[in-house]
Length: 247
Image 1 (spheres, helix red, strand yellow):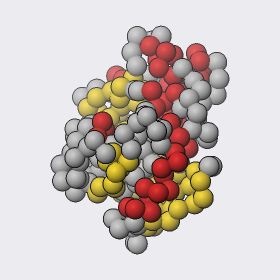
Image 2 (cartoon, helix red, strand yellow):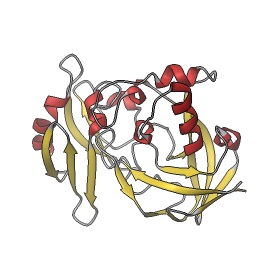
Image 3 (tube, one colour):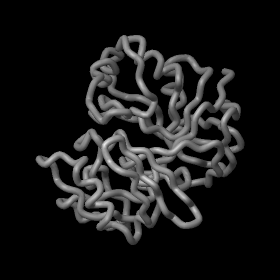
């Protein structure tokens, strides 16, 4: 195969904004740096960040579609994040100390009939990804284009909220990598599982409105999966344009 990295994305606050990167240094056994370091626990959750807990404990796009339209910029040195949303003024916050200001800011984006956001928690072990292991999500542009073609409309890649995007593969080729190792740039991953998708992917990342039957389209292939979750087994740098090689 002849594939290369096209995009690298992190999500500093789980389900609350995405940020593009040109390069990243990955460490074995860890998530992508600064990806899902924070998450927003809702009023029915007792999550405190000390241990990994499932996504049901947090405010997320599947329950609050307007969150999909958020973007984020993180200043790593100060741990200050700037959040942007088309319906809200920009907000600069340090998640560890500005929780009340954040809750006031995000409240208009939350449906009244859902559990309301209660506090921002910081994950102490590793990024609060949806998997019970420290994962990085690898996404295939050819698979994305296959979904677009079958659905009959263009789709933003941000619906999938992935980390590393690759092009130059066959559609769904990534599903053949299960339990195999793949080198991306200087880092090596072991592919652990396919990523089962939820209603969040039906939401437009520009508007925060559900407008595409992504799940029905995926099921036409006999599954509801998109992308794979992988574990970093060898530390290294990954940059835009880097080659991807199955080992």
